[in-house]
Amino acid sequence: MPQTPRQLSNGHRPDQDRIVRSAAELGAIVRERRKRLALTQLDIAGLGNTGNRFIVELENGKPTVQLQKVLDILDLLGLEIVVQPRAARLS
Image (cartoon, rainbow, N blue to C red):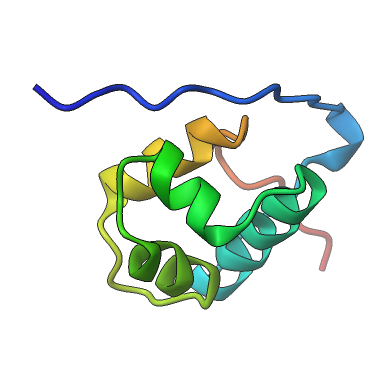
């Protein structure tokens, strides 16, 4: 049975919500959060029970990374994905 990653303090503020439309954008958010927490890629890999290569690929926006691993790392970093209908756009 795989271990559940230890979750870090989330420090969420509503003004930090961001829309993500690409793997590259998500990777940049993960990198920013990791650096804000003063952690290395190796730290996150160890805490998340994954390889360093996965963290590098995630942060570089590789579109084919495994979704469950991404969700585990987001949880570890105190981040979450919220899926909701798009807001109506003005023409």
